[in-house]
Length: 507
Figure 1 (cartoon, rainbow, N blue to C red):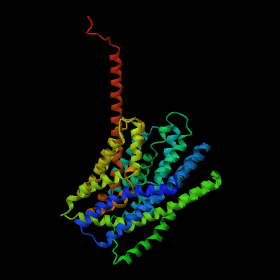
Figure 2: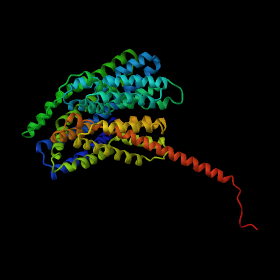
Figure 3: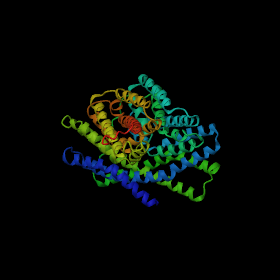
Figure 4: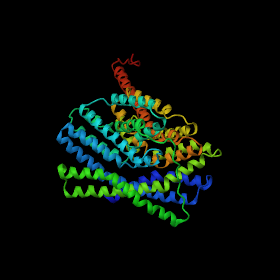
């Protein structure tokens, strides 16, 4: 596939992801919920920026990030030095997470915690757990027991933590497994797994993303014990534009600021790659230029994405949530959120890859269509539960503790690969639109109802990321039961074949 056709394909996927939300919002704002004209126009322009930015970013990331991860993983494999592998994994985990667009959006929206501090803490958490993931692959440690131990530690710290940090901590685990980190981590894991020659090596390359999502949760919970912050929430400011020229200037002024932020975010990865290139990789001119072009596309796509989010998308999402929190419209919050959740998960390209993967693993016992339907129901339910929290102020622990206990319990009844894919799939469900639109939507609703944004609105991403853990493993249980029924049927047929046949029509 040429770069042009790949870009057009990613544009189509991005449009399929964004346009359903645009359509729902347009219908609401043109028929029922009144909003300012300038916000609506900024939203439409932001949607275009999101589509182009997501397409450019995805193509660039595939050309650059996946290749860098694959080359470095291959080089580390040849070194076979555990100390080098672990050190490089730690540094790469930090570098790649700093540039994750979903994390950038979340950190910008969190009141009371410095954006840079939150990004660094979350990135260090990913780096530490990427290092632990490499230890698991090299030593063949059971993923199930690592999940049980570390989630047990998460819940222990959660019970002792400040309430204001809980929801942000769980959301941090959801946003780090995004379009930047997932392909890179997966490529690195496959490369490291090739060091082992046993039958379980390929199976153990799954689960990296699931483990790496625990690191940020623990890191932010620990931050809550030492970080001095005012618990007063900063008021969210929604920009207003007098005319189209003012709106244009708003976008133009956002470009250099976002370009600077994205440049600093990508700089560690670029430096890391250049050091490896001249010290060890020694790639030829053609692959080096291709990766360089991919990095430039990633830079441009990420800048457009963040500009569209910050200027157009988040502002309208916040205001729409505020309007719907009015007592006359409040009944729409739950069903509308569930409807948007249904479309968001259906439009995620990675979801379709996951569905086909489960179909292959189950040998056709679970069709991709059935898997897609179950995920749609799960994410719609997650969005609905998020609005229940916004309306009632229930703690995030009432939802994530039972959810993760069910997920961990199911891991003892399904094949290991199903568990690994389930915990990897949380990042698939919590895509860019969840942090860019649905989270500000919840923040606006909670703010209008006089609730606490830190405790009641945040946690939405965490619930969306949690649901596939249950859904995929339930499908794994169905697969196991179908296989057992098939074996029982074959055994019964074989036993029946051993019986003597009596010809009743003979004399």
